[in-house]
Length: 229
Ligand code: PGA
Image (tube, rainbow, N blue to C red; front, side):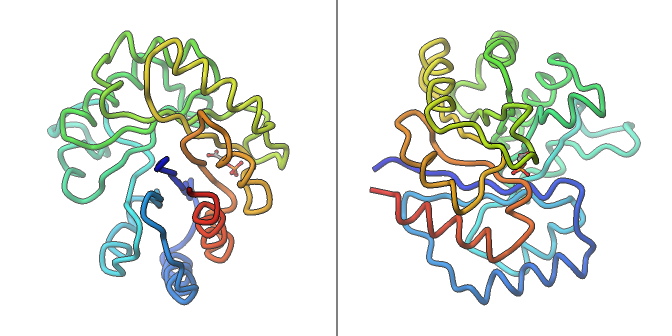
């Protein structure tokens, strides 16, 4: 059975009250998650306790981690602090590269720290060179990481890439580097998700905007269920 990932990234959104409301509305959807489908949600750090308490049928991730170990690094949350609380960390998002000047070097350090503390890194890429650079610096990523292919023009624009283009990109990553899950992200909605789930080389979807609405997110999980073989 092909395993399918449904990954939500809340980015810098939601007050505590809004997060509680989302959890309550998502729970009331009674979404069944079929075996072979993994749902991962990355809210902001300060919402994690709400999710841990609610015990929703989804894995938890965060949207950043320190490139340094625990210690005198004011403001940072290290991988060791997160280990045991969340399973995943989303790294290298184009918004981090653009607004926070994250370089391939910093991203590689974060990935190495995540792996050292058994967090699973999901690394966003928009070109093959970002994938090869990372794997050259942190070869062990290939055993435990996932890539999320996000073309820059597709993010938040309503203009998703075509499933065929995304599949060709995923295939190129796999041919160049070896077997690794490659997800597609960028304007994925319940209405267009099935096309991506159907592709041979795509292992799931990453959603920003559509994950903010609990009904849309539940629908995406349903679409993934109906596409799983
Ligand atoms: P979007 O964001 O689904 O709102 O396009 C995708 C992402 O940035 O991960």
